[in-house]
Image (cartoon, rainbow, N blue to C red):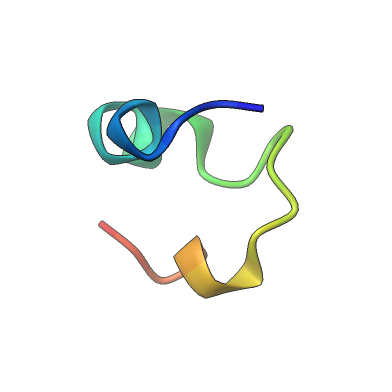
Length: 28
């Protein structure tokens, strides 16, 4: 599970591959 920082950094690349966080779906 990636950390918040990782999600913010690779949020666009990973999108929602391994993360089941629908809240971060619309996150840039």
